[in-house]
Amino acid sequence: MSATPTVFHLFLPTPPDAEAAVRAAERAPFSYGPVGGTRGELPEGFDHDVQRTVLGRGRATWDRAVAALRDWKQFELSWVRFYRPDTAIRPGIVVAFSSHQVGLWALNLCRIVDVSEVSDDASTRFAFAYGTLQGHVVSGEERFELRWDHATDEVSFEIRKFSRLEHWVVRAFRPLARRIQARFSHEALANLRRAVEAP
Image 1 (spheres, rainbow, N blue to C red):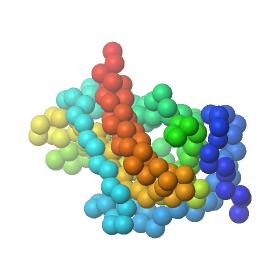
Image 2 (cartoon, rainbow, N blue to C red):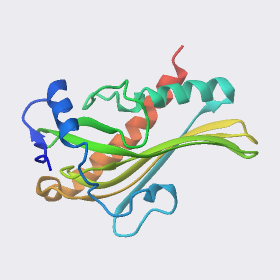
Image 3 (cartoon, helix red, strand yellow):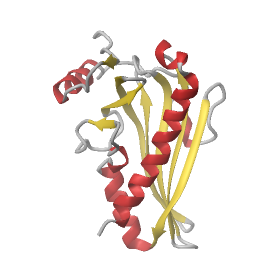
């Protein structure tokens, strides 16, 4: 098995750094047990975070929201770098992103667990989840879900995750680490909303 990529860096990891880390992690195991656990009730033994926003109404809003989510627009934050935003959203794909925290850049690797596109009388939904791989500073899973309610015509975006702090650096700064996790969800929701509202 390939060596676990270096997690913390003094400077922002370059795209070649990220590509090498992704290749090294292709067969890496998940770093947590309940893979797929964001599909239903979030599992016990982890911190939970669920945030939701309304993006608008109607078909045009839905189409723009799906396009934005497929383009990983939720990751376009000043303190986060998502590598290869053209990455297809398919089960088994490994993605890499860096986040700036406690003065360091953390390079994190996740694998897409599942992708769901469902439409019935009540709603149309598009969602995908990724789970952390060995070496991630936390362990757990995050799900991004769009929902178009047919009764109200409302389009919403929800982020659901369960996680546990793993690396000693983030455990040492637990309150800050939890605030950073919540900040990501809050800003990612706002980012997608802006992407949908853009002319």
